Structure formats: structure tokens, C-alpha cells
Length: 515
Image (cartoon, rainbow, N blue to C red; front, side, top):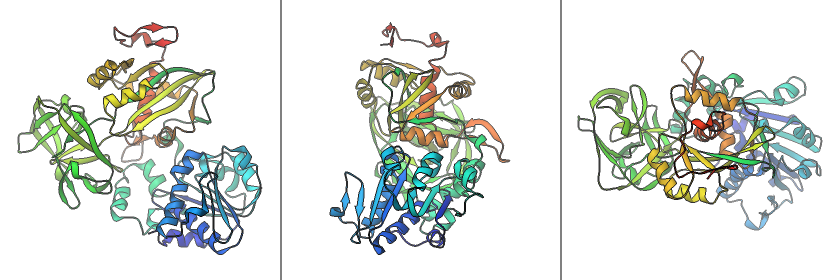
């Protein structure tokens, strides 16, 4: 049920023509504005209300989904009133709420409306806002996450008469206590906390990549150069016990919405499922703790995250109660393959499995890289959890031919995918390679197709880590780096010294690339 909150109360008090709402994660800014719009349409005759965001994929995955959920939850929704072709809902009063994207010139410069809501206003241009604003008769709503300065702060704030409020998760009493705990556990990350915790304007220097452009389509003249791929593997035997808020439970029985233990308390599971039958290891830690797990799964040690198959005989690992424990590692690859499972955990991306801290499941990210006009275009091919090597190969074999450059930490997976007829090599890694890769991408002129939602989301949230004093350190955040890593692998193989890449014997070089 969508309920009235402090955020709703604050929004109801706004009275000026231009009503601007910045806010952090979980602040209920978009939901509260939608509730206001729905009430307005239900109680007034023949209004035209326009809801706009940067692209239609963003609309469908965001504000349209929220709008329909509100109507259905409150039993207002009538299928006959929802035009699925034009994305217009007509209320019994004759008022309409229409949804269109800012990249539709005919709509932006189209007929006048009564009320306008620009969702995620920081992602559209000032020119687009101006065209929409002059065609709106009454009220205009804007909302955004204040990741960095944009035209509201330079062209409107202090210059145009408007209401401006900032909401945070504290204004949303409907937020689950566990989600509140998850948000507050990120206080130590100064840049993240400033924007998403406190809803304040972020500092641009914390953002790793800047000035990327969004384009509609890939031009015909663009030349496909590479695919970059980051694997999303790591799995555990189905009987592995996971500590949940309701007690221990086998990982195969964990569901989306369950809360599992992390170092920052119980966090919500956003994905769970089988990842197929794989080769596994039995790992004994010499004090009654044991896991059956794939070799690529990451476990937390004193020196950071390590792959299971790279553990030394003696390690210091993290166990429940946040204790670092010195252990003797006994590692054995089992002869029989087993069905394995994994989870994705909101915010912390970790959980305790049989009492030891492991990393969660990450998505497999595949990005196509095109050369165009002395710059590069990035296009998202897939961003999906739970893919097997065969499924990855099936995706790639249906794409135009080009060399795939993948995470070299997965040599067995690379070999298997190659056996299905895919031209694939491992990325070059070594000391300082992560920072060198980032620096090379920073030097390029980058455009991203608007359909590449996960690339755009990671791009906007890919930040440098900060220390306890809030100083930026040369280490990227791990939460938004799957597509970013895939891009780095592919882009860096295009450096002038690409002949240093180890090319398999069965891969042939043609003028157009590797096949």
C-alpha cells in the first residue's frame, strides 16, 4: 500500500508554479509527486498532465511502472482506460496523464498542457526543459538525485521564483526498517552518503567518468571494434546455510525480499536462483566451518576479496560477528559437478555462507564498442545475472562478429566459450592495470545508446572511494562497476600496443578484426 508520508506532506505544502524536489534514495519523491498527480486527475475535469523523462526505456522501467503500481495497489486501475500504445491513462473525469520521453521532438515541441512533471530532470537538457516549460499552463514539477550540478542550480535557483525542497529517506516512514539500516550503513562513503543519504548536491570530483553523451541509435557509419565482457559468476552448493533475519536457511530456498546477514546488518535480497551445474570445491577452514563453492567465488580475507581457487594454505577470513579469524585452508576440487545457487544483496553485495563472508552474485555485462568520428560508441548487449557459459555464447553468436575481450580471471570460462565458436581472449591485467584502464577510457570521447540503461546507471554512479576523512582514494567503488569493467577490458585492447594481447592459435586476423 502506498501511504501518506512526511515526504507527501512536504510536497502538498508547495504552492508556486515551479515545484522542485531534490532527494536521496528511498525519499519517496517520485511516488509522492505521482500521488499528487493522480489525485489532481481524479478530482479535476479534462486536465492534460505530461510526465517526461530522458528516454522511453527509463520511463517504462521507472515512473510508468510506479504509476501503474499505485493505481493497481489502490484498485483504481481500469484496463480499458489505459492506452498501451500511446501510454496515456484517461480518468473518469476526462483528465489524462500522458508519458513521453524528452528525446521525442514532436512531443517536446507539441501542444500545450496543464501540468508537467519532469522525472530525473538532471538527465535532460536545459533547452528541452525550456521548450516544455513554455508549453505548460499551470504547474511544473521537477525531481532528481543531486549527483552533480546541472541547469537547475545554474539557471533557476536564485533566479526564478520557485519552491525548492530536499527530501531524504527520513521523510519516508513507509520505508522498511531493514532498508533504512542498509542506507545508514553507507555513512562511511562520503560521496555516496552526501547525495543518496542526505540528498545534498554531490561533488563532481568523486565521479570517475564525465561528459559522456547519450545518442538515439548507432550510426550506420560506425564500425564495430570489440565486445567487452565482465563475468557475473560465483556460486554455492544449494544446501549452504545462509543466516537470514528468520534464522538459517539453505541458499536454494532463499527468495527475493528475504533479508540476509552482512557486516552491516540484515540486507534485502534482490535476486536469487540457480546458476546451473558447475565444478565445485570443498573448502575446509579447520575449525568446523566448510563450504562447497565454485572456484571463482570471492571470499573476504584480511587482504581483501579473493577467489576461492587462489586462497593460500593459511588465510585470515571474516566470520560471523565481524571477526577476522586465522584459519588453515584445505581446498579440494570435487569430481562430481553440482547444481549451484547464488544471491544478489542490496547495498553491501555480500552475505555470510556457512558462517564465512562471501561476495554476492554479479551480473554478466557485455558491451559492444564502436569506433565513430574519432570517438567510441557503447551499446549494451546484456546485463543479466545467472548466465551460464553456454548462454553467454548463445548471446554472442547472435551478434555481429568481433573479438570479445573478457575478464582474464576466468580462463576456464573463456576456454569453454571459445569452444562454442566465439572469438574471445582474456584482458591484460597486472599491477596498476585497473587505474590504467580507467585513465585510458577517461581520455576518449564516449557516447552511449539510450537503450543501454545499465551502462548509463553505472556511469552516473561510478565513483572513487573515499577514506574516513572524506578524501578521495584511487580505488573505484565496487557497487557500480560491472559494465564499467567490461568497457575497460574492451577499450584497453584497442590501445596502440594491442599486439601484446595473447591471441589464441585458432583466432585469425583479418582487416576487419579478429575472427
